[in-house]
Image 1 (cartoon, one colour):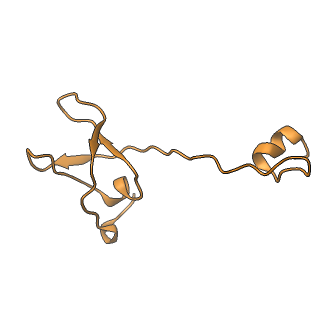
Image 2 (image 1 turned 45 degrees about the vertical axis):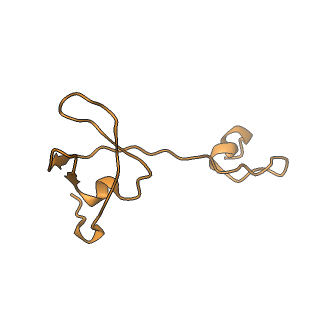
Amino acid sequence: MDDPFLRRFFGEPSEDEQPRRSMPHREEGLGSGVILSADGYILTANHVVQGADEVKVDLPNGEKGVLAKVIGADPRRTSRC
């Protein structure tokens, strides 16, 4: 780990390097849900939306990436397999 190139990614900055600012992090995941009503309510597990800044939904009619709004969550009911 004394290689300056690898140190940039995995180690502490050397004395001649400036500390790097943290890079933005983007994480994506998939989940499933059930459409409950014609006006767009969807039920899914809490862990699918937990901590999400943005949620997009692909619909059965072929529409992709429809922006969704989380209106409620129940973290007490989260279970993971």
